Amino acid sequence: MAELDLLAETAGAEIVAQVIQRRAAPDPAYYTGPGKARELADMVLQLKITLIIYMDELSPSQVRYLEQLTEAKIVDRTALILDIFARRARSREGKLQVELAQLQYLLPRLMGLGKQMSRLGGGIGTRGPGETKLEADRRVIRRRITVLEQEIKDLQCHRAIYRQRRRRNRMPVAGLVGYTNAGKSKLINALTGSDLYTEDKLFATLDPSTRRGTLPGGKFVLYTDTVGFIKYLPKTLETAFKATLEEIATADLLLHVVDLNHPDYENQISVVRSHLARITADYFTRELLIFNKIDLFEENIDYSRLQRQYPGSCFVSARTHQGLEDLRQMIAGMLEWSYHQIKIYLPYTESALFGQLKQFGQIISLEYLESCMAIETRVEPALADKLYIYAAPPGAADHNTI
Ligand SMILES: Nc1nc2c(ncn2[C@@H]2O[C@H](COP(=O)(O)OP(=O)(O)OP(=O)(O)O)[C@@H](O)[C@H]2O)c(=O)[nH]1
Ligand SMILES: [Mg+2]
Image (cartoon, rainbow, N blue to C red; front, side, top):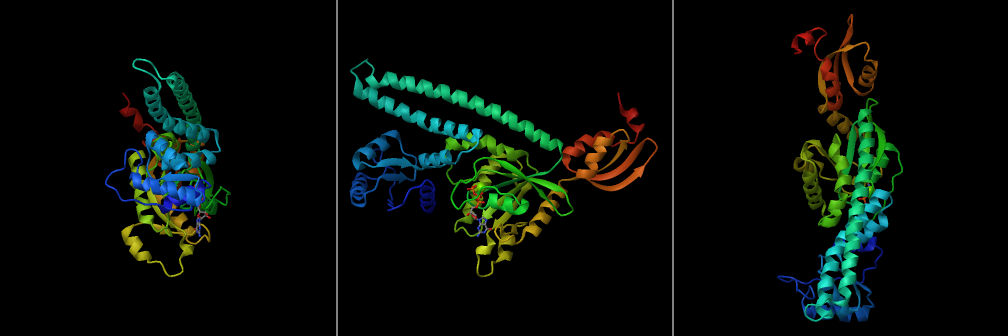
């Protein structure tokens, strides 16, 4: 319920009352029991309430019955989140994704209305007067959905090309993931001196953006910001934003930012992990858990207990920059682990590849031979793939070729 408050505030609502009812199952007509619904109607009058937000998804007929009874606007949590996303969307892709999610939310609700109307509207075997129009509406919506899906796919192809170009540059990528409002954007700002938008409300970031930072030893890393997670993310939004999150499927490292000051942070960790484990198979091998906002604690934090519970995690404040040097060390360390140590015999003609090696790899030994350089090096997997063809000394490879 506290989170629902925050969502409502983010959407610009002012909260005047909260109502909770314990029930074995939702009432088919009023969601709460009819008695409780009438109580709500009284509250609407007394407190001049204009909007009621429900925690669960409501059926179209529940919305209609409740609107009739209370004369307030009825919204469920999914509609609320969709509304926030619609306000926040900035990029073309973000806007298209939100529109797609909204239409997918709307479509089955129109269907529901259609059935209702045809029953009201006509005699046996005739169509209700509203029905033909609704049919047309549905067709328009379906067509729009197809168009949106295609446009989103095109934009994603475009982004994949950029991603490949970045990969060709051999810069390792760290994706920032986490619950909404954990401080992902602020942490990127702290690490790179950028100015990404941050706010103490939910879903400040919708679009992925990337900034370059430096690691100890002078190597570069790219940090990619992503949309935050929330418990019970509406299905339509999950599908719409899945592709955006796939950006991080190719990241070398996933920095999972946690708001340590949030009363429910443990639960938030599980929510994020279960979402991500579904998106990327080897999530846990690439996760670095970062507890943020440690500046908000007046007494000492029991770091050793948290370290035991979450081994390999680290503690920072994106606000005061406390712990950032340790974090950079850990990022560099984790990127090293995934590095391959190989020995290659690189022809002098491969100067471009040698350039990449010097810039992005670590050269352990280098020997100038007659026709090539013998190099022992540590490089990230993608570059190692390119270098493996030079793993055999010149001449030796010929015997193996068929
Ligand atoms: N005190 C304190 N506040 C922080 C810290 N890091 C972030 N915040 C605040 O927490 C709020 C959320 O920060 P963001 O960086 O917008 O969080 P986010 O994870 O990007 O959130 P979304 O994009 O909305 O999912 C902002 O008001 C920040 O100023 C921190 O280390 N200490
Ligand atoms: Mg953000």
